[in-house]
Each structure stands twice: as structure tokens, then as C-alpha cells.
Image (cartoon, rainbow, N blue to C red; front, top):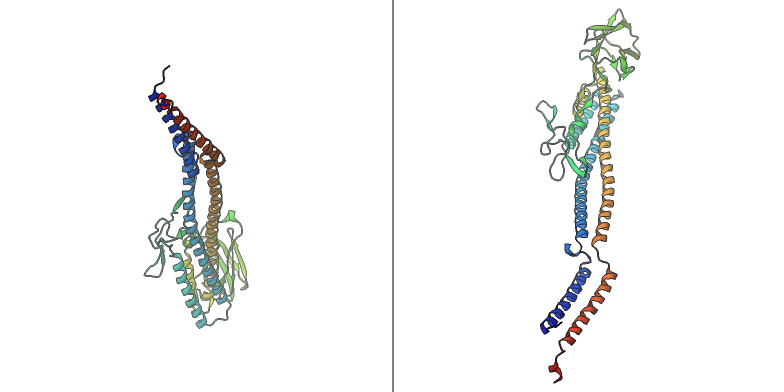
Length: 399
């Protein structure tokens, strides 16, 4: 086989270039810290690393979403906590006003203080985040949730929607609380029924908190307890006004605390009702906390008397319901915050696993790379030296 000079040069240059290419690839690995610099280095590992990178990016995006939801929920939780403080202060004022020692002037002063608390509560309910989105307006983040109508009633302008954020591959978390759930849909009375004294009552009869003695017998009807005083003897009738049926007739009333039970319900009445006085029992409906406080203010401004005591009794009961409602919603927010904390912990674990798996696929083994670099440098030197020797094999060099 004849070997031409051109072939010798081509093969020699090709060998040197191959060694230089190998050396350059190893140098790039050491410089970047990655074994797979281009997909051609390891197509399978490169594809797997890309999938892991995408999964890690998605996990990071979920973490950003959860952080945003956490900030929003913390604002909502803090606002509800402030509302609870206001309601507790109002309840304390209502209880204190019922001790009988306040003068009409002092009661008016308490009413003014409660009116200020009402304005504070409205401001809390209209709270917003740093972007100006209202916390308690449901889907309507740009709409002020509560406005005071010309007649003084506080109206809800939002909706019941909850804005959701994708907190995980299969989990969405609501990042807001609808104002209707915190401040509006609050059951009156004991949650089953409510009670009230007749507006025209002239006696000193006072109705206290009622209770349910047998849920199976509760009809959901309206009732009236009507008192009759004849020759100094007081009796009462209980009439189901929904069906116009007398439930109890001509029952004796002694004037002391009396428990009146019927159709699974029980109420307590004391004092001395006048002839024709009456008390009503109605199924519980939803009432806003603002209406409850406004009714309390009206009772305080009515001055000392039986109307005040009856007004305070129902106000305290309704305030208890409002507090329970607010605390329930606060607890719900707390559950969501706890879930976010747990999801963040799991997300961090996933992130570490993604990074570890990607490192095994991509990162260079420096000990091996240094060894390869030394070997490839030696191979390049050998290729260069052998090429120099071969190119000198000519008779003209010896003439």
C-alpha cells in the first residue's frame, strides 16, 4: 500500500484536531461545571434534565402564587381580627349599659362611642391591599364592598365569589373572604329563632334569651305571646300567628322569671307586663352586624326603661352570633394559611429533589474531568510530536 505525503499530512492534522476537540470539550465542562454542555454530549440526559428544569420552574411558579395568596390571607386575617376586637368592645359596652346605673346622658355617651365603633368596623370591612383591591368584595376587587345608603343602612356591593390561585398541580386556594360571609349572613337570636318585645308595650316585662328544647318539635312558625291583666291577675296566651292557632291559653303568670315552653322552644320573661303587652317569636333570619349595632345604638338612645333592657338583651345575643361568625371565618383563613405553609414545605422538598436529580444528570465530575484533561493534553502533545517526526521523513533531509 502506497502512502502519499498528502495522506500523511491529512491524517496527522486530523489526529491533532481530534485531540484538540476532546481537550476543548473537557475544558468547557470544567469551566461551566456541567457534563452535558450541549444536547449532543448526552441526548438522553439532556432531555431528562430539560424535563426536570421545567418541573422545577413550575414548582417555583406555584411558590410565587402561594406567597401572594399568603400575603392576601394574612391581610384578611388581620382585618377580621380587628373586626373581632371592635365587636368585643361593642359587646362590653352593651353589657355595661344594662347594669341599670347609667343615666340617660351616660347612655347617650355610650351610644356615641358605639356609633364611632360602627364607623371603625365599616372602615375595616372596606379594607384593601397594596394594589387597591378590596379584601372583602368577592370577585369585585375594584368595587367598594360596603356603602352607607342615604337612610343609614349599610349595603353590600360585592358578591360571594372567592378569587382562586393555583397553589399546586391539583390544588387551588381561595385568597380572599367574601364580606357577606363575615359581616352579612349572621343568624339572628340563637340561630333558630329570635324574639322581640312589642313596640307599644307599656309594662316592665322583659324577654330574655331563648333556647331550643326539642329540635324535632320546632315548626319554624311565627308566634306571639300576649298578656292579659284582669283584676290584678296576669295571664298569657301563646298564638301561632302563622296558622292562627292558640298553642297555650290563659296561662298564669306570677311576675317572677317565667319559662314559657312550646313547640320545642323556650323563652324566659320576667317583670310586670301591662294588659295588651306582647312579645313575638320569629324564625331566625340573616342580619348584618351593622344592623345589629345600629339597633343597639337606637336602644341606647331610647333612655332607661324596659325598651332599653329588651334591646340590650337581643343586641348582646346578636353580637355573640356576629363574633362567632367572624371567628369562624378567621379560623377558615387560618386553615388556608396552614395549608400554604405545608405546601411551601413540600414545594421546597420537591425543589431539592429536582435540583439533585438534574445535578446527577448534568454536573461534571471534577476528579474525572481533571484526569481526562491531563490525558487529553498528553494525547495532543503525542499527536503533535509524532506529526512533526513523520513530516521529517524525507531523503532530502539527509542529502
